Image (spheres, rainbow, N blue to C red):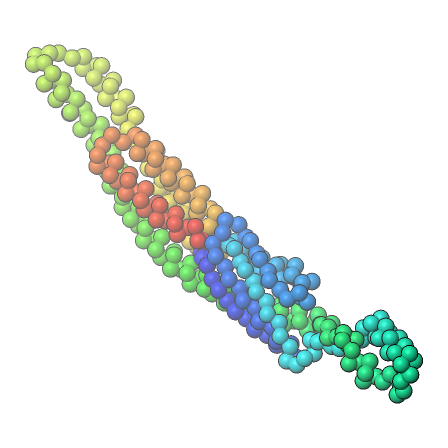
Length: 292
């Protein structure tokens, strides 16, 4: 089943005082491009996140957002700035001696001085967070894949309908093509007969010209290759691996065959069919741009 490259998913996980939420958004892109936005304390886990995403999503621009919260204030711990505290202590004792004060320097007084005690981020329990991150990310990726599959299925239905239209247009072109040389022969003979009454022309030369014209406007090979490419395209709908690039390549080949048919066509009706085929191919190409 083909997948779209567009999707969104959210996953959550918690353990002890750790609460972690992951959001994953994906849009179409030529390659697989993963952007991860993590809290600074989790930067060491970025490579693991990228690996987990790449294992599930092969193509697309994928943005991963990770939000980390703690159930209590355990993410912050008070830390003594020993150097600054020592300087304050020396200064306060010097003031006491110089100003002949009494009472001594208490812990409360020293601790109340600015930046002597500061709050810093506590060391996180990496194993606990890794468990939550993997679980939340897996849930988010599953939601993304579900959305990508649903959109891919809708895209598949649309393309299959357009392939039916293409097959119909191709059938019209194939049935019209053999009549073109014969109609051109009749028109040429009519023009020659009206050019000058009683004038004779070389029937052998006329036959040669007709043969050359028939060869120049013969599109049987292009029709055969076109049908072969269409069959390959349809087989990709059942592939289990990403097929977006293969579909894009086949569309290029289909367009090439169509352009060749158009360049060989000197018939209004056949040209009309070629233009209609190109229009349908363009609509399919727009859909393929979002296929993984």
